[in-house]
Image: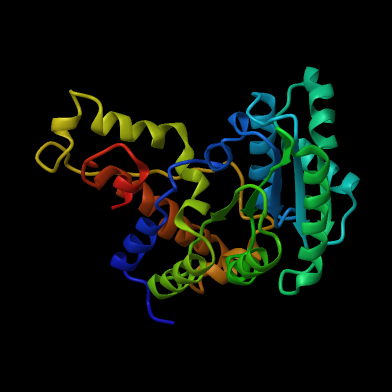
Amino acid sequence: MAATTVDDVAVVSGMVHKAHMDCEAALRTASTAGTEPGALSIVVLGASGDLAKKKTFPAIFHLYRQGFLPATTRVYGYARTKLTDEVLHAKIKPYLGASPDEGPLVAEFLNMVSYISGPYDKPDGFEVLNKTLTQFEDKEGAVDGLWQGNRLFYMALPPSVYPTVATMLRSVCMSSTGWTRLVVEKPFGKDLDSAEALSSHLGALFTEEQLYRIDHYLGKELVQNLLVMRFANRVFFPLWNRSHIASVQITFKENFGTEGRGGYFDEYGYGAPVGIAAAAVALSNSLWCYLLVQRFPSPNRSQPVAACS
């Protein structure tokens, strides 16, 4: 594999053009569920993994808590690991961030969550998933005498299986009565070549309106506020340039280590030991995007496509 250069990483980061959001904001943007009719199915692919447990399911719970999800919503976990619904509930419950008096709300939410086990590289499990979604939509998706089923797929997966899973979803699990949207987590490729290959593959399967490429760290409130501070603040906007800024320092802190993520860092950490690999992955994904948020020129209009172009 060719060495990854600064330009490569910048281009890869730039391709993650819907990245300025965390899991919760991504799901909210991708679904617009609170204002759309019909049944909504949120499918977390890789539901048994670390990202789904710590980020994705808590984000969906927060949306539910705030009333952003319609009553006709179901959440499905899909992964290769064989689990029961009850085991999945026990895995994600401690990470939901609920207060002690929200026990009934948590119980309501978990009652919406079910689990399906299946392979990523064969249609069998996806056919079961599609049948389950269709049955739910047939039951709950009536809109003015018609049936509408909207499907949101969130890839909390090893990036190596993105192409395979995307192909399976396109061939087996597309909604025939509503919209289908796909949220793809970082890292978006290992280098420029793999990022471009993945982009081409996904682009051949889904329209740009159906795709959401995200880095959940870019949804941090401080990062979001940088855009407003840069382009909407009359004090800072004219000063945000090399004539007034001597240097940019970015500090990346977490209160937990690499536990449970060794395999991920082995594959995407450029051959370094796990601790160094974690720093390398953070640098080549989130931190480069942070830097781009600091540096990209003022968009000529407010639509997301303007920021990425």
